[in-house]
Image (tube, rainbow, N blue to C red):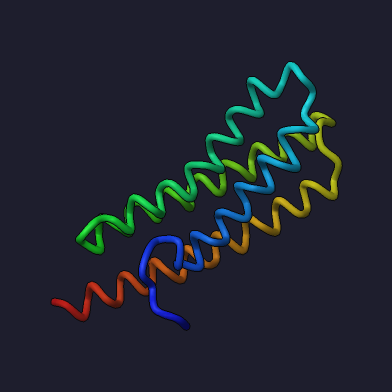
Length: 127
């Protein structure tokens, strides 16, 4: 693993970025016009929140602050998944887009959980 110099080097941020780009480029454009400003805005805000929270947490000096923002990012991942499920249930996106989105969410959550475990261990070692 290479050195972490900025939040952009975090694997969890990279996975959330992939999710955010997927939502922006492959989901929002296929939503019905009337939903782009409602559900589309909500799902895009949630996807953007994933990377933004990880970036903000990285900038915090205390590991507990960082972990809180990681928790927020994880919650936003699940919010994205819920919006994808809703979009599929209501016939706005096909099952393959839901499956791809679910896969991206689950990978992002798994990597965020790993990063949170690392932060917890690092914090315990400093005590």
